[in-house]
Image (cartoon, protein in one colour):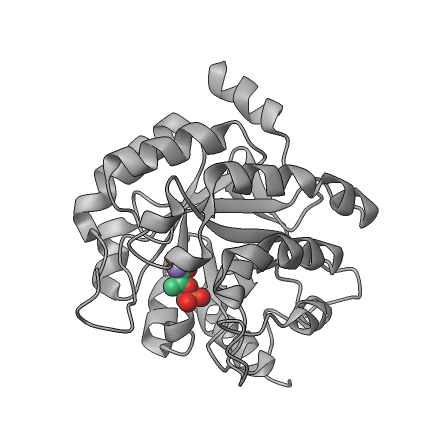
Length: 285
Ligand code: PEP
Ligand code: MN
Protein backbone atom coordinates (compact mmCIF):
# COMPACT_ATOMS: atom_id res chain seq x y z
CA UNK A 1 0.00 0.00 0.00
CA UNK A 2 2.51 2.57 -1.22
CA UNK A 3 0.04 5.38 -1.62
CA UNK A 4 -1.38 5.43 1.92
CA UNK A 5 0.51 8.49 3.10
CA UNK A 6 -1.66 10.07 5.77
CA UNK A 7 -3.46 7.11 7.32
CA UNK A 8 -0.35 4.93 7.62
CA UNK A 9 1.20 4.43 11.05
CA UNK A 10 4.44 6.32 11.58
CA UNK A 11 5.56 3.84 14.23
CA UNK A 12 4.16 0.66 15.76
CA UNK A 13 2.25 2.36 18.59
CA UNK A 14 0.95 5.27 16.53
CA UNK A 15 -2.78 5.61 17.19
CA UNK A 16 -5.03 8.63 16.67
CA UNK A 17 -7.59 9.71 19.22
CA UNK A 18 -10.29 11.99 17.81
CA UNK A 19 -12.49 14.28 19.85
CA UNK A 20 -16.14 14.15 18.86
CA UNK A 21 -17.54 16.36 21.61
CA UNK A 22 -16.46 17.55 25.05
CA UNK A 23 -17.33 14.18 26.59
CA UNK A 24 -16.79 11.85 23.70
CA UNK A 25 -13.76 10.71 21.78
CA UNK A 26 -12.65 7.67 19.85
CA UNK A 27 -9.32 5.89 19.67
CA UNK A 28 -8.30 6.43 23.30
CA UNK A 29 -8.85 4.18 26.29
CA UNK A 30 -12.59 4.80 26.35
CA UNK A 31 -14.68 3.09 23.69
CA UNK A 32 -17.07 4.94 21.37
CA UNK A 33 -20.48 3.31 21.83
CA UNK A 34 -23.07 4.59 19.36
CA UNK A 35 -26.72 3.60 19.47
CA UNK A 36 -29.97 4.66 17.86
CA UNK A 37 -32.37 3.85 15.08
CA UNK A 38 -31.59 3.23 11.44
CA UNK A 39 -33.79 6.19 10.52
CA UNK A 40 -35.19 9.18 12.37
CA UNK A 41 -38.96 8.66 12.11
CA UNK A 42 -40.62 11.16 14.41
CA UNK A 43 -40.26 13.26 17.51
CA UNK A 44 -41.67 10.72 19.91
CA UNK A 45 -39.34 7.97 18.73
CA UNK A 46 -36.20 10.07 19.21
CA UNK A 47 -37.43 11.46 22.51
CA UNK A 48 -37.59 7.89 23.82
CA UNK A 49 -34.18 7.07 22.34
CA UNK A 50 -32.61 10.07 24.09
CA UNK A 51 -34.33 9.35 27.42
CA UNK A 52 -33.34 5.70 27.62
CA UNK A 53 -29.82 5.95 26.20
CA UNK A 54 -28.95 8.92 28.39
CA UNK A 55 -28.84 6.48 31.31
CA UNK A 56 -26.63 3.95 29.57
CA UNK A 57 -22.96 3.77 28.63
CA UNK A 58 -23.83 4.82 25.05
CA UNK A 59 -21.92 8.05 24.35
CA UNK A 60 -23.20 9.06 20.91
CA UNK A 61 -26.53 8.72 19.13
CA UNK A 62 -27.16 7.68 15.54
CA UNK A 63 -30.18 8.26 13.34
CA UNK A 64 -30.54 8.59 9.57
CA UNK A 65 -31.93 11.80 8.07
CA UNK A 66 -31.16 10.70 4.51
CA UNK A 67 -31.53 6.97 3.91
CA UNK A 68 -29.84 5.09 1.05
CA UNK A 69 -32.65 2.59 0.34
CA UNK A 70 -32.37 -0.26 -2.14
CA UNK A 71 -35.79 0.62 -3.54
CA UNK A 72 -36.71 4.16 -4.59
CA UNK A 73 -40.22 3.43 -3.26
CA UNK A 74 -39.04 2.83 0.34
CA UNK A 75 -38.95 5.57 2.99
CA UNK A 76 -36.06 7.89 2.10
CA UNK A 77 -35.70 9.63 5.45
CA UNK A 78 -37.12 12.91 6.81
CA UNK A 79 -34.26 14.93 5.33
CA UNK A 80 -34.12 18.57 6.41
CA UNK A 81 -37.46 18.13 8.22
CA UNK A 82 -35.66 15.95 10.77
CA UNK A 83 -33.10 18.58 11.83
CA UNK A 84 -35.26 19.89 14.67
CA UNK A 85 -35.54 16.35 16.02
CA UNK A 86 -31.75 16.01 15.90
CA UNK A 87 -31.38 19.19 17.96
CA UNK A 88 -33.97 18.03 20.46
CA UNK A 89 -32.31 14.62 20.79
CA UNK A 90 -28.94 16.25 21.44
CA UNK A 91 -30.46 18.54 24.07
CA UNK A 92 -32.20 15.78 25.96
CA UNK A 93 -29.36 13.27 25.78
CA UNK A 94 -26.38 15.62 26.02
CA UNK A 95 -24.70 13.44 23.41
CA UNK A 96 -23.25 14.04 19.95
CA UNK A 97 -25.19 12.88 16.88
CA UNK A 98 -24.07 10.80 13.89
CA UNK A 99 -25.96 10.78 10.59
CA UNK A 100 -25.28 9.81 6.99
CA UNK A 101 -24.87 12.32 4.19
CA UNK A 102 -24.99 11.27 0.54
CA UNK A 103 -24.33 14.49 -1.38
CA UNK A 104 -22.84 17.97 -1.14
CA UNK A 105 -26.37 19.27 -0.65
CA UNK A 106 -26.85 16.97 2.36
CA UNK A 107 -23.58 18.25 3.86
CA UNK A 108 -24.81 21.84 3.56
CA UNK A 109 -28.16 20.95 5.14
CA UNK A 110 -26.83 18.91 8.05
CA UNK A 111 -23.31 20.05 8.89
CA UNK A 112 -24.28 22.58 11.58
CA UNK A 113 -26.54 20.07 13.33
CA UNK A 114 -24.63 16.79 13.35
CA UNK A 115 -21.31 15.97 15.02
CA UNK A 116 -20.10 13.14 12.80
CA UNK A 117 -20.88 12.75 9.10
CA UNK A 118 -21.32 9.14 8.03
CA UNK A 119 -20.30 8.02 4.56
CA UNK A 120 -22.31 4.86 3.99
CA UNK A 121 -21.12 1.67 2.35
CA UNK A 122 -22.75 2.50 -0.94
CA UNK A 123 -20.72 5.69 -1.15
CA UNK A 124 -17.34 4.48 0.07
CA UNK A 125 -15.90 5.08 -3.37
CA UNK A 126 -17.92 8.16 -4.26
CA UNK A 127 -14.69 10.09 -4.64
CA UNK A 128 -16.26 13.51 -5.16
CA UNK A 129 -18.28 13.08 -1.95
CA UNK A 130 -15.14 11.96 -0.11
CA UNK A 131 -13.38 15.12 -1.29
CA UNK A 132 -16.33 17.25 -0.17
CA UNK A 133 -16.27 15.91 3.41
CA UNK A 134 -12.49 16.25 3.27
CA UNK A 135 -12.95 20.01 2.82
CA UNK A 136 -14.90 20.27 6.10
CA UNK A 137 -13.50 19.82 9.58
CA UNK A 138 -16.19 17.49 10.95
CA UNK A 139 -15.26 13.96 11.97
CA UNK A 140 -16.22 11.45 9.26
CA UNK A 141 -17.35 7.87 9.85
CA UNK A 142 -16.32 5.95 6.74
CA UNK A 143 -18.10 2.63 6.34
CA UNK A 144 -16.56 -0.20 4.37
CA UNK A 145 -18.04 -0.72 0.91
CA UNK A 146 -20.29 -3.74 0.35
CA UNK A 147 -17.45 -5.63 -1.30
CA UNK A 148 -14.48 -3.34 -0.79
CA UNK A 149 -10.98 -4.57 -0.10
CA UNK A 150 -9.14 -3.04 2.84
CA UNK A 151 -6.76 -1.33 0.45
CA UNK A 152 -9.71 0.33 -1.29
CA UNK A 153 -11.09 1.39 2.09
CA UNK A 154 -7.80 2.88 3.22
CA UNK A 155 -7.46 4.76 -0.05
CA UNK A 156 -11.00 6.10 0.40
CA UNK A 157 -9.89 7.45 3.80
CA UNK A 158 -6.88 9.01 2.06
CA UNK A 159 -9.24 10.89 -0.29
CA UNK A 160 -10.79 12.58 2.75
CA UNK A 161 -7.50 13.20 4.54
CA UNK A 162 -5.71 14.52 1.47
CA UNK A 163 -8.21 17.41 1.36
CA UNK A 164 -7.18 18.42 4.87
CA UNK A 165 -9.66 16.62 7.12
CA UNK A 166 -7.76 13.97 9.06
CA UNK A 167 -10.65 13.20 11.41
CA UNK A 168 -11.59 9.87 9.89
CA UNK A 169 -13.07 6.90 11.75
CA UNK A 170 -13.17 3.59 9.87
CA UNK A 171 -16.11 1.21 10.25
CA UNK A 172 -16.27 -2.51 9.43
CA UNK A 173 -19.95 -3.33 8.73
CA UNK A 174 -19.78 -6.74 7.06
CA UNK A 175 -19.07 -7.71 3.49
CA UNK A 176 -21.15 -9.56 0.92
CA UNK A 177 -20.81 -13.31 0.74
CA UNK A 178 -22.83 -16.34 -0.31
CA UNK A 179 -24.60 -17.45 2.87
CA UNK A 180 -28.06 -15.97 3.38
CA UNK A 181 -28.04 -16.91 7.11
CA UNK A 182 -26.69 -13.44 7.81
CA UNK A 183 -27.15 -10.24 5.78
CA UNK A 184 -23.38 -9.85 5.41
CA UNK A 185 -20.29 -11.45 6.94
CA UNK A 186 -18.64 -9.54 9.77
CA UNK A 187 -14.95 -9.42 8.97
CA UNK A 188 -13.12 -9.11 12.27
CA UNK A 189 -9.86 -9.88 10.51
CA UNK A 190 -10.37 -6.49 8.89
CA UNK A 191 -10.37 -4.81 12.29
CA UNK A 192 -7.04 -6.39 13.19
CA UNK A 193 -5.52 -5.58 9.80
CA UNK A 194 -6.80 -1.99 9.67
CA UNK A 195 -5.42 -1.35 13.13
CA UNK A 196 -2.07 -2.65 12.00
CA UNK A 197 -2.00 -0.64 8.78
CA UNK A 198 -3.45 2.67 9.95
CA UNK A 199 -3.41 4.92 13.00
CA UNK A 200 -7.11 5.71 12.51
CA UNK A 201 -9.79 4.55 14.97
CA UNK A 202 -11.73 1.49 13.78
CA UNK A 203 -15.25 0.75 14.96
CA UNK A 204 -17.61 -2.12 14.16
CA UNK A 205 -21.27 -2.14 13.07
CA UNK A 206 -22.62 -5.60 13.94
CA UNK A 207 -26.17 -4.55 12.97
CA UNK A 208 -25.66 -4.29 9.22
CA UNK A 209 -23.27 -7.23 9.30
CA UNK A 210 -25.79 -9.57 10.94
CA UNK A 211 -29.08 -8.24 9.59
CA UNK A 212 -30.74 -10.00 12.53
CA UNK A 213 -31.02 -8.85 16.12
CA UNK A 214 -30.38 -12.19 17.86
CA UNK A 215 -26.65 -12.49 17.13
CA UNK A 216 -25.70 -8.82 17.55
CA UNK A 217 -24.61 -9.15 21.22
CA UNK A 218 -22.20 -11.99 20.34
CA UNK A 219 -20.70 -10.06 17.43
CA UNK A 220 -20.41 -6.89 19.51
CA UNK A 221 -18.49 -8.69 22.26
CA UNK A 222 -16.19 -10.33 19.71
CA UNK A 223 -15.48 -6.95 18.10
CA UNK A 224 -14.37 -5.38 21.38
CA UNK A 225 -12.26 -8.43 22.24
CA UNK A 226 -10.64 -8.08 18.83
CA UNK A 227 -9.52 -4.51 19.51
CA UNK A 228 -12.25 -2.39 17.94
CA UNK A 229 -12.35 1.20 19.21
CA UNK A 230 -16.12 1.16 19.43
CA UNK A 231 -19.45 -0.02 18.11
CA UNK A 232 -22.39 1.44 16.24
CA UNK A 233 -25.60 -0.51 16.83
CA UNK A 234 -29.20 0.01 15.68
CA UNK A 235 -31.94 0.17 18.31
CA UNK A 236 -35.54 1.38 18.30
CA UNK A 237 -38.21 1.96 20.99
CA UNK A 238 -40.42 -0.58 19.17
CA UNK A 239 -38.05 -2.67 17.04
CA UNK A 240 -40.74 -4.47 15.06
CA UNK A 241 -42.23 -1.13 14.01
CA UNK A 242 -38.94 0.28 12.62
CA UNK A 243 -39.56 1.74 9.17
CA UNK A 244 -36.15 0.49 8.03
CA UNK A 245 -33.95 -2.41 9.10
CA UNK A 246 -36.56 -3.73 11.58
CA UNK A 247 -35.11 -7.27 11.66
CA UNK A 248 -31.78 -6.08 13.02
CA UNK A 249 -33.10 -3.54 15.54
CA UNK A 250 -32.56 -4.17 19.25
CA UNK A 251 -34.90 -2.60 21.79
CA UNK A 252 -33.40 0.36 23.66
CA UNK A 253 -33.28 -1.70 26.85
CA UNK A 254 -31.48 -4.56 25.08
CA UNK A 255 -28.98 -2.10 23.70
CA UNK A 256 -28.33 -0.50 27.09
CA UNK A 257 -27.89 -3.93 28.67
CA UNK A 258 -25.51 -5.07 25.92
CA UNK A 259 -23.37 -1.94 26.26
CA UNK A 260 -23.16 -2.38 30.04
CA UNK A 261 -22.18 -6.04 29.59
CA UNK A 262 -19.09 -5.02 27.59
CA UNK A 263 -17.31 -3.70 30.66
CA UNK A 264 -15.47 -6.93 31.50
CA UNK A 265 -14.31 -7.59 27.95
CA UNK A 266 -13.24 -3.97 27.53
CA UNK A 267 -11.10 -4.16 30.67
CA UNK A 268 -9.57 -7.45 29.57
CA UNK A 269 -8.18 -5.73 26.48
CA UNK A 270 -7.10 -2.55 28.27
CA UNK A 271 -10.15 -0.45 27.38
CA UNK A 272 -13.11 1.07 29.23
CA UNK A 273 -16.76 1.60 28.44
CA UNK A 274 -17.76 5.29 28.54
CA UNK A 275 -18.29 6.82 31.96
CA UNK A 276 -21.99 7.59 32.08
CA UNK A 277 -21.78 9.32 35.45
CA UNK A 278 -19.17 11.80 34.24
CA UNK A 279 -21.41 12.70 31.29
CA UNK A 280 -24.51 13.07 33.47
CA UNK A 281 -22.64 15.17 36.04
CA UNK A 282 -21.34 17.47 33.30
CA UNK A 283 -24.83 17.80 31.80
CA UNK A 284 -26.28 18.71 35.22
CA UNK A 285 -23.56 21.31 35.98
C1 PEP B 1 -26.85 2.66 8.09
O1 PEP B 1 -25.95 2.91 8.91
O2 PEP B 1 -28.07 2.77 8.37
C2 PEP B 1 -26.47 2.14 6.77
C3 PEP B 1 -27.28 2.30 5.72
O3 PEP B 1 -25.29 1.50 6.79
P1 PEP B 1 -24.41 0.86 5.59
O4 PEP B 1 -23.99 2.01 4.74
O5 PEP B 1 -23.30 0.20 6.31
O6 PEP B 1 -25.30 -0.10 4.87
MN1 MN C 1 -29.72 0.67 8.83
